[in-house]
Length: 311
Length: 298
Image (tube, rainbow over all chains, first blue to last red; front, side, top):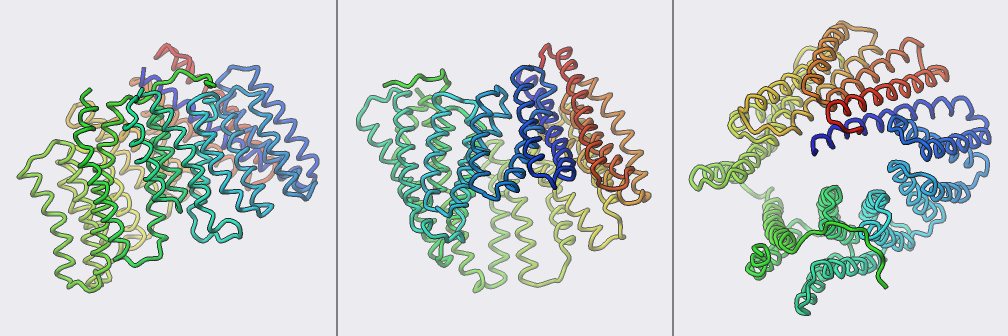
């Protein structure tokens, strides 16, 4: 059964890569043909998008999956380019695209179209922040994405989970960029971290309820240890976010989230230490101290953990 | 208020305990080791060359000797061997840094490849084989660029295709004959690498005014597509069929652009229509195959 599942992955990859390849050339053709007429480009994009949604809703054929993906990407590009050239306003263009990102999931049952819609939605939110130079709002967007990822992992709309995961990681990567010194952004990293910790506390509560942990002492220990770990990286929201992803992915047995979260966390930790303005000697001391702390914790909890492993 | 839940499989207590156990130990060891490395890095400039080389050599020799003496479990042995293989490269880099030999990058990678060949052969560990194969590829490219005869990009990719195909066939042979623990992922990865190089060779050869290397690539591609397709049908491998088909589509698309002599509206439309139609046809056939082989409609 596993090999069957993996074999059909080849078909999925073929349809996705074929769809993207075809759409790249088709977008090129459309741009060369209608580039001088932004209104025509916009309406053509709208028409293609509407047609794609109809096909996606009415057809169950896997054969059309790749074409639908490519057509949707082409349509969104054309609508964006058309609106941009017509309205000359980035805000209006982004708001329209945001609207389309909301409309697509209402009509589409397809996994890939929903993924594109979620990525477009989050991308538009980020674009609105940067266009209007309200960079402090990035520190609200990150916990919002964390909350959305948590909700779609634990409750409803599982189809959007990976979209929110990818968006969240992308935003965390952005939060880790040291050279981004825009007003309202620098100095408020703790805000992202604190709000992400609130979401993490909610996940911990879910884990405790699922595992049916009754002991008050155990509950306090779990909250204290996890949130203390996150508090240590209060000025590195990327690390807090990475820990949240690992926590949630492990809890829900989501292998893709676990792998991508693990790689992302290693990168964010490395980036954090690289950006620290200390000498190698001080960084060495910090790392050895951290290592000793974790080894001490391992030593203290070793027996307790072995007991649970054997149960 | 309880929000309605989707029925899920959640990790159990035993799994959490194991994960936390490994995480605390792993993070503790990793941070401590990296901290020590940083300490040496801080003092690196002041260390005597013998001390620098001595440290690197000790990091290689001691763990390998440790394997022989303490005989840890299989996975630990393989990981130590892989770590030692990576450190051989670091040792040679350190040597080059200290003595400023002026050697080419080719010399560095060649030495690294040669010196870990024996460990790679005895390791029975796919990740180390992958590292070795990567080093072989890099050595070949650097040889062509820095030392050897001036070969075109097409010729280089043909050579890389041959090397990776040979590696893939070797892995498959070892898997079939049970000569080693060969996981499927490494066979698929080398097949992907070989196909990528073949596709690149053909596509660039088409635009590179059909140099002799292109004709070699053409002959090799015909053999590969035919043999690959026959083997894919024999072993019921949809993955291989998808790979070969995608490769063929990309090459034909490149040929269309070349024949129509450049990028115009007509060319772009023609190529996009060709890709859509061929992918649609391919998927419909592959779904039928999947159904007949596995009883699933993909």
